[in-house]
Image 1 (cartoon, one colour):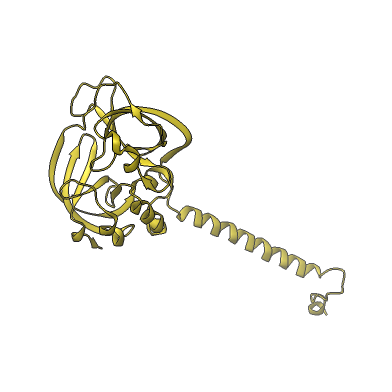
Image 2 (image 1 turned 90 degrees about the vertical axis):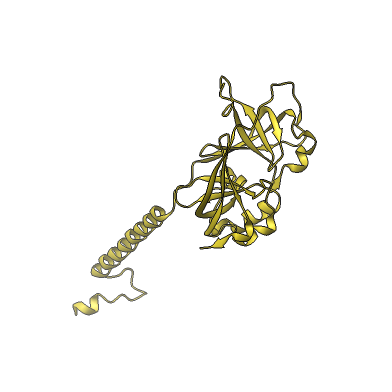
Length: 250
């Protein structure tokens, strides 16, 4: 008789007391399980990097413009007298997934004023240049700093596009970012190599110090790779000079 009383019939106004308690326990347990699983998924995610893109905030910059291997603005550091460290180097890019070569071609080696949005991460800085804002400026020239050849190195890591990695996207690396990185690099964004051991950033160039082209890198973008190259320090910029034909997947 008791077993029949726990059986719920749809046309009855309510289930038995025992069945109601059982259903409440099941719903509570499932809800608790859902919360635990959600927390586990959140905690398992990698934390976002401390990278920044000052979107919508235009700043003024003045410095010496260089275009090799990639466009950079060398900005003198106030009060710094050490000639080897007297300038900060800002990588320059155009809006969207484009390098800044076409915007800056007529100003190579000149002192200029420009406007743009700042992008930065772990000491590396970049400016997304506002088209039409570049003009000559009467300022003291800044040099790239002392160039030191620190010898051959072999590293494990990943090739990324510098614009997204430094702050425009977060995260701006890994296989989930591969398609975006490929489009950025094919559009002329400077490539970075990120060491998997310590997270160091290296500006990637060819063995002769010139810029690298997309076709030589495309199969290795956002992939775990092994690379051997010459480690060069230029001012506060770490550069890795490589032969793309020697890149290897891990």
